[in-house]
Length: 88
View 1 (cartoon, rainbow, N blue to C red):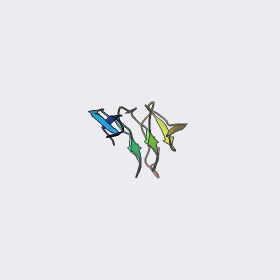
View 2: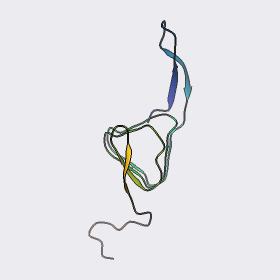
View 3: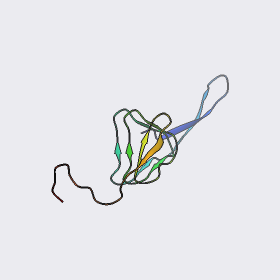
View 4: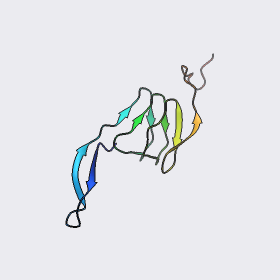
């Protein structure tokens, strides 16, 4: 999770003035290995962010997001989950 951004500076120093930018992650979200979440992004509750994804924009709740940049590829159920092998 990257929580700071900076402006582009002059030719003498391209990394300009820095500033904080919060990242918000909703309840129940799963972020896969090596995923990158950029500053200022909000990830809605119940999302799955695939391994290696780069999240550059807000993610609506209960979705599977994959790729670079991350995009929603599947809607996920919003209700309670059932464990694998558990009888209903």
